[in-house]
Length: 572
Image (spheres, one colour):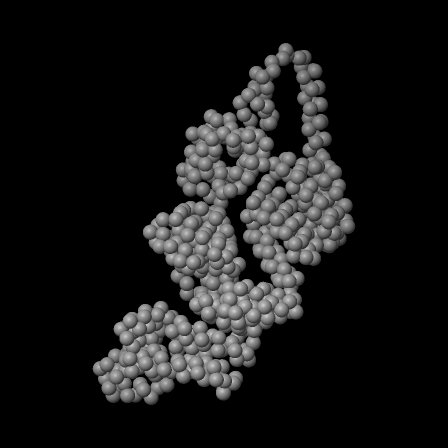
């Protein structure tokens, strides 16, 4: 059913019906949630609609399910590039090329990303310099978080304006008369904007102040006294901030020398002098992190985030505090559930600012959580019990139930080769050949001396009509157990099918089916595109003397036999 839904999705994608394709791919994912290809296909569909955030989520899932699949990194790079995450795009394409150095799609993507790098901090001619403020899902998150703009989101005309600005930031001039837009721009840029009829947040100039509150002229001597007093107040404030910065610098110097107690003292003094710069809190949190005082680190990070939101501090500073908190929570994690809070902190940080280092920390935490979950779930005794339950259902020909128990056995003990072998047999009974082949190969990987793994794999390949491959598998098994009756019978059946093709005894339908399957085989494609083999095939048709020489070469004849088995050529 999943394959059927996937086929429908592919057809809709080819017809450029991307929304319909997403529907079918989603249906397929619900049926087969661990199939990495489905997430990859849906990522491509989302990207085609310009929904790069959704495309990125699916691409990340693809890579997590199949980290050695180059195409997944192509999807990941494309999504990052669409979101203008240029460094992340370059990293994704580079990782993909490490796996498949000749992949043209990855090469092209990497070139596009590198060309975009110099323009990352610039904006195109005619575009709004505030374009970044309206980009991505972060815009809606910030508008929702602010109590003033949250009210505006209930107004349809306001939502339409913001949606238009998200698509076309250059249209900002059209909406500048709307005070709601001006107020929203202030929230998005983390500054307080002056609005008509509202309180002014910026100091007014002399002329403006005079017009707003006219006052009679005072004597020159008295006016001079007022000015002097105001200057003194200003100097006192400046001295406090300047002193705080000096304390921070002293703290930084102590931190570099790993004199952590001294650093803590200086940062604490800076916090007392100036509570409007959250960098003092994040720096002290960094020291606590180095000292292993993770609870104190988390407290400082929480204070920094809370104060930063009050002051509308730079979102990068808030993201830094959240990342540091996540790092401390990872250090404290003892169970798989403990990682949830750390992952949540990293995700919040990424919402504020998508930093590659934070992304890596989040991914590492997710992997550590998964590994710990598997370790916590590990129980060989229960695994054996579940495998035995699966065997009972297999005997009763209740294969789906058997698969359920074999799968539980594998979760309880991922190193149990027998469980993979038995599940492969169940999948074979249900004609789920790709899954059966995967389990048989995993069985052999875990225990190369387990003969049953070779009989399972050979049987699957035989049913898939890959007779040459099945023959090789059976022969590998015979090296371990030369008199095994299942392996010997498999060899006999494979040879019979291969000879059937050599004699030309295939029916037209069988020949057509075998040829179609053979042309999809990468090995057959490689043989047919090899210039040497093309000449050999020509000699077999036109030059009997040369053909006779070719028959003396075992490697050449082995390749010829593969083409014969695939129904591509016939020897007479």
